[in-house]
Length: 436
Ligand SMILES: Cc1cc2nc3c(=O)[nH]c(=O)nc-3n(C[C@H](O)[C@H](O)[C@H](O)COP(=O)(O)OP(=O)(O)OC[C@H]3O[C@@H](n4cnc5c(N)ncnc54)[C@H](O)[C@@H]3O)c2cc1C
Image 1 (cartoon, protein in one colour):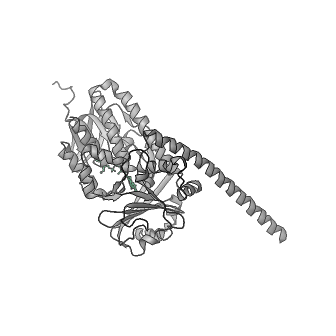
Image 2 (cartoon, helix red, strand yellow):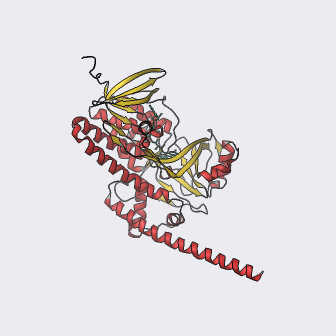
Image 3 (cartoon, rainbow, N blue to C red):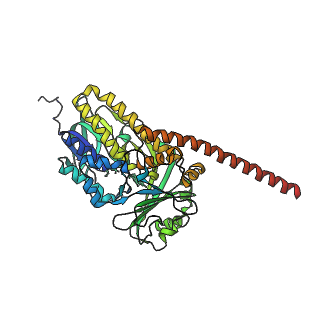
């Protein structure tokens, strides 16, 4: 080799980030025969939020050979409850979904699940290294060079392809300035684990997630495998300003006190973890892939977690990224077309979740979720969306289109009532003024 030749490759694919997306794509790639190095900046087990999984994610656990391991560490999740304003339950069970999504998913402690997926990748033959941070990457005509920091020791690694699975750190998104933040969805979340929390009245076994709306956002109640409950509140920015120096614990307690239906869970609750805060900003990268690189999971986009879609979207994008990388490494001239298809396909799924998320607290959506009707199987279509079936199932997609039409009509009705109410109040005010 002369002095100008590029260095030999250390691996075929370098994956930055050992969360669910990174571990999944690494396992799938070694199963196809590629040499993969997976770098995780911290050591597992490490705390992570995002404890409620979706049924549509289960076939991916099957495909990577980790389903039995997930079952061993998870608690069955059979559906989701969206309580009404009076606190009464309104449960959607996954076994009523259209299509062929499994009837259940799992609730997990993410530290345990993420460690399991990372170790599983290593067992399958991935060169999986912890406490190694990818600091930046450089692309050239033949591959990619990553500048890495392994516990203070700096070096480089050369690969033919790069997967950015760095989550909300968005390694490439920041380096290539790809991130578009959604200014309308900039909430923050606070959360903790509690013991002695009562399960939902309609859920004696503790197999349902509860998502309770309140005036300033929404709250989650997730029964965990060890009998504790993960409780979190996602709050709008205006409400966070009312915190006024209160410590995390006080602010969390004050917020739970105004969440309809929370009292039925929390009367005897004792907190067993610190209250943590995190930003919950929605964003998407303008580009999801380019020459010799691809983004998976939160590294490409983040949606408000009200429908627990994050881990599924991360592992699903990892599954789809496999086909792009495998195809591009075998036949480089196909790369651009494979990437275009990847981007279009994923963006469609994100948009379908986002449509529901961005309307979640609207009066019309509240009304439709509080009084579900299964006319033309529309309710079942919504359950399929809640199960994660938002990509390919034509039957489900047609039901979601009908739901959108019903939503539009309901919104009009609400707007009409709101206007009539305002006019009525104005008229009454005028009458009072005239009487004075
Ligand atoms: C408040 C809140 C609640 C949520 N609730 C849910 C839920 O109930 N269900 C659900 O499915 N999702 C939920 N999510 C979303 C979920 O947490 C994420 O979507 C999911 O973790 C994404 O997986 P990922 O592998 O893409 O990223 P991550 O899980 O974040 O993994 C990224 C990994 O990359 C590592 N890393 C970062 N930078 C580097 C680097 N430069 N070099 C090497 N390693 C690096 C990190 O340490 C991390 O381990 C929630 C999110 C929030 C904020």
